Length: 430
Ligand code: NAP
Ligand code: HSE
Image 1 (tube, rainbow, N blue to C red):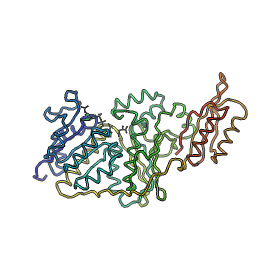
Image 2 (spheres, rainbow, N blue to C red):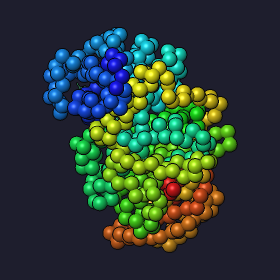
Image 3 (tube, protein in one colour):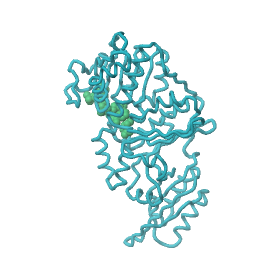
Image 4 (tube, rainbow, N blue to C red):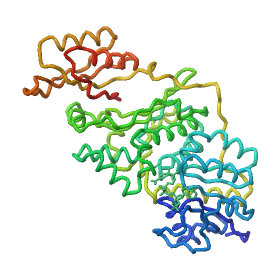
């Protein structure tokens, strides 16, 4: 190990992720320092509540509720932000950068919304911003794009990238209610502070914005990404999906098209033999296609304190090595402003509809006519359940690939048909 002075680190956040980062730094210090080539010293830890009981013991004099104790301490060279949310964390990260500190963050909200600007500021101050933990928990994704796949033109990325929804969908497929499954995900530490961020697909959209921006070197803004959450998925959809040979997953997908990219997050039916269909629990999987490398699948724990701390502390070791050697080992980012995201209506996809109808003659013809007029070709059409008490039946229709706008219009027009009680479910088929 070198004999240089220790590298002082300020930690913002001591929750699910922060406590695991602190634990690894405090209990495995010599090993980390040997790998980093410099002693790593946890100097201050910013929290909201000094009296809170913690899962890890941290010396009382390390804890503070004053952000200046980290951001204005000139001896602190690296700030690790694992608190979460947009403000005040965006401002704290900016303050750290402007003060000449390097930053490591797990904050996908800040990186998705403000990443390109913060990275520009960091380049101007000759400091680095690492954010491996912001996407895919412990799976090495950012470094894979930034380093190992640099030689490629990335064509598409499809991913199961939110551990909470994957856990919840898996539990629902085995008969749990969505409410129970969300509570379990919260107890396991997978869910965001507000689990609506997970269930509504916001978290996945933030992560896709980050991945898309890095993969294509463009600015993919989260509000440009088409987003639907899993709220509308019902237990019966899992039964139909299985019968049709599919699993249901929240999919984040981006694909290159001439001059534009496709970027969308929504629940989807995935063929059971697709690698993304086999991703279980809080696991994440990212399927990348590059023009040189072909297909690459990265799988691992996408949520939870320990896997996420693995990414954060890995960033710290890499950064510490660069700082002490005085070289930046990673290429900097540049973003092309001219390429935008395709509106969802112009994307081609397949769909699954579950429709409750009056069980009488002529219904199929009426539904078939709507699809025909919208130019949507039907792939399968089944009638499973019928209820004699109200003379209704359930139809399940899947389509061949069509423009998403046509699929949506067909959904709206069918809902208006007199014998249709409700279009209970609409899922895209991958
Ligand atoms: P968490 O358990 O809620 O912990 C947040 C921590 O930040 C707490 O210690 C809290 O202090 C502190 N904090 C929050 N706001 C603060 C403020 N304004 N000033 C000072 N301290 C503040 O969150 P988490 O699950 O560890 O997640 C942290 C970050 O990692 C988020 O960006 C999240 O999206 C990301 N992430 C989480 C996971 C995961 O599986 N949990 C995985 C990947 C990435 P108190 O303890 O005093 O309340
Ligand atoms: N809430 C996130 C998830 C944590 O469930 O995937 C990891 O980013």
